[in-house]
Length: 273
Image (cartoon, rainbow, N blue to C red; front, top):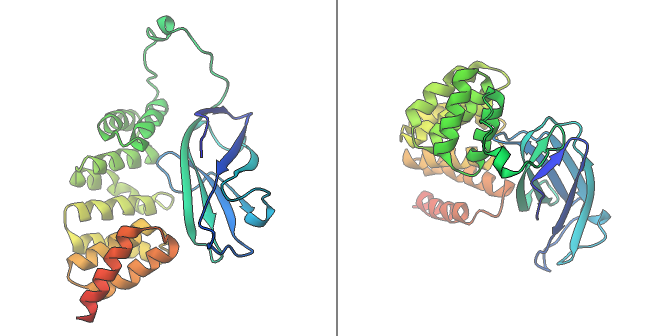
């Protein structure tokens, strides 16, 4: 899948991809392609569309045009678009992702000689958007510096969460915990905050504390990252019996995880012994 890097709210986002899968892949009547547009650094989609495979005219190695979607309902910012094949039962089997920027209005192209003399935007919101872009590129040093600037300029929950994720990416686990800790009681942000806290305790190899926070997420856990991390904690606590069902559940949600599948086989052998 290939995406243009810039759009405006008045434009439509067109999705075109080339999809191919083994001929023996059995696609049921409810199999579909799911398109999700997520704000940078967030898991909850701002826009979601689904097209049944049976409604598409071209499949196999031929291009598939999924049509255009209005972007008027989402705010300007940095976004990631994901297209996934959803089989019967809701399993994701194939995914493709691209990043793009949504502007509030068309941007004029200035000659470099003029552009270079313009200072960087100082508004906290703009700095945070730039930080999120660096974060998505895994350039955590740049992202952390910008996110910290935005966070100190204006303490917003989204910016605090982004800064904590950058600290985690840099391996500064204790700082990540201290930064995001106040958000765990915020109804809107608590789930994402707890994920960072649990992952950071795991980074510190404090497996019991990591599990203590992961248990808050396990009731409704559909994210493979949460399930895999909980399984890792149980394995490090020498409790493979509890890790097995978590790894199986993770593979049910996302079968294309060869490392997790290999870990499951190894863990099942340990349980049998």
